[in-house]
Image (cartoon, rainbow, N blue to C red; front, side, top):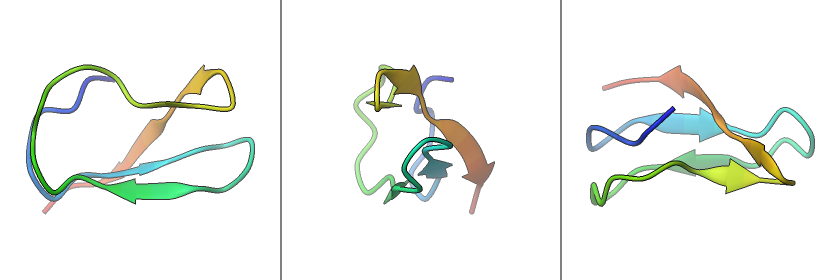
Amino acid sequence: MNVSKKGQVFHCNVCGNEVKVLDVGGGELVCCGQPMELVEEE
């Protein structure tokens, strides 16, 4: 899933890392070789 808005929270299902988007640059967040899952939007 691509980053599309500020405030989105992404989670890695492998290691548990969570990332909150502060600035939108587009693209896809990847962790542990897999795309991160969107879990929350503000």
